Structures are given as structure tokens and as C-alpha cells.
Image (cartoon, rainbow, N blue to C red; front, side, top):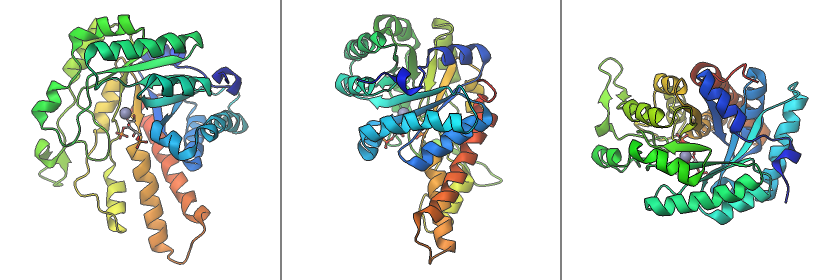
Length: 332
Ligand code: G3H
Ligand code: 13P
Ligand code: ZN
């Protein structure tokens, strides 16, 4: 067993309290590779931002659980080396689906875990989340739980709406689980295809898809029920059109990819939303840079040559999110 405290990591408690009070959100960036980790740390240090580095079950299987633990420790030491004496870095499990996985992560240095029982019946979601909370809190590890189901692109708008978090359930759920933060469903979803073209309108000038707005009325109702309680938004990539265009220009095929407009995330950040999850935008930034580099340099085959611009492009994106969307810069 290794405590996250020995690795120099922090849990989310203090940073969320400050973010809710200060009207900004903490970035939660997913990582699978060393380049993503380096870019996240560089961006956080340069902007003086707290940061959540999160790994899914799939990412942990991809990279290896032991390597992730040392990468997180490496991230802290790297931040110090870059000139940040007291970095605030959280290592968070994203979408943990069993008690055993959450426990394993806690035992291997995670400072925060998500238990995602959102697809379970209400009482089962509560029972599972409470079991994880009871274990995690013994070690001062914070827990995110989820209520409401994020829409899949295959859903019709009507069925997506029926999966929105029900504000009348949030008090009971948070009290009975003892969770430290709550992920809610208000219209975001995972991936680069958050809405079908049929769910969007088209901008008459550019021809680009304009997605329907998030359900801010539900968010505000939840805020009223749980004043000051940390709320989390998953599925919050914006799917930048320039990256999609670059990918398509250099051999990719992502027609009509669409994300959450940044103005809406900016608005959400000013509310009780204090953690915003971004994964797809990093994937797009990385893929766009690699496709471009390899198309322009067909004779190159040293991964460092194409991973360097990929890392730079992700770092630029992370800094943009921190400074221009979430507002977590200068909060260390
Ligand atoms: O919400 C899911 C994250 O984007 C992680 O995705 O399970 O493919 O690693 P993954
Ligand atoms: P995106 O697919 O919008 O980046 O969402 C990521 C996420 O919610 C990770 O949990
Ligand atoms: Zn998610």
C-alpha cells in the first residue's frame, strides 16, 4: 500500500472548495501516455493552476498500473523541477466501475476516485458509492459519484433528456453516499460526436453544426439544493474545428464531429461546477499534429520527431482551456 501523500499528490477537497468559492473549475485531463502527462504538467506549471490527472480503467490497463503510480510521482517531481515548489496535482480514477478497482487504485497511490454507478438502479448506485466512500475516507481519498446518465450519440434527444440528473434526488444521494463531489448529466456526453446532425442546427454563414444548449436550468436547480457542493461535468471536450479540419485534411475521417461550445463551459465554470473533464480534445490535438507531421515528412520514422509537435499542440490546448475557459490559472 502506498499513500498518495507519500507521492506528493493532493486530494480534491481543498481545491474544490476554493474553486466553488472563486467561480472557476479545475481541469481534469485524461492521460494514457508520457507525452500527455508532460504536456499537462507543463501547462499547469506555466499557468500556476491546480490540475487533476485522471486515468480510466482502460488507460490503466494500457499503461500498466505500476507505471501509472510512478508517472504520477514523476509528474509531481517534474512540476517541482519546472519551478513549482508546491504543485497541486490529483491522481484520479475516471469512471471506476467496481469497488475492487477503486480499492486497488487507492492502495496504489490515487488521491481521488470516481465510482460510476450511474447506470445502476438508484439504490444500488447509492450502496456501491457508499462502500467506496467508506473505504476511501479511511485514507483521506476523495470520491466522485455520478447521478444521471450521460447521453450516447445514439440516443434521441427525448431519451437523452430523460437521463438528465433529477434535482429532487441529489440531496438524498449525496447525504446517503457521503460522496465529496457529484457528476451530473445536463446534456454533455463522451467522445467527438456529442450530438447527431439532427440534434443540431446549422450556422447559415459557416454551415457548421450548432449543438443544443446544456440544461443550465437543471444545473441551477441542483445548485440550489446543494449550495456549495462540488459538481462535476463529464464529456466536456469542445472538439475544436481546426483540429478536426487538420485531421480530415491529412487523411482522417471525422465528418460532423461536434462538441460543447466553450462559452457554455465558461458559464458552467462560474457555477458550482468545479471539475471539468476533457479527454477527446487532447486526442484530437495529438492526432492532428501527428497526421500533419507525418504527411509533411514522409521519410521520418523516429517517434520523437512526431511526438514532439503532438506534445506541443496538447500543451497549447491545455493552456487555452485553463486560461480562457475554466479560469483556474494563478490559483496555486
Ligand atoms: O470518459 C471516458 C474517458 O474519455 C476515457 O476513455 O475509457 O477510452 O480511456 P477510455
Ligand atoms: P470528452 O470525451 O468530452 O473529452 O469527456 C471526457 C470525460 O468525461 C472523461 O471522463
Ligand atoms: Zn467521463
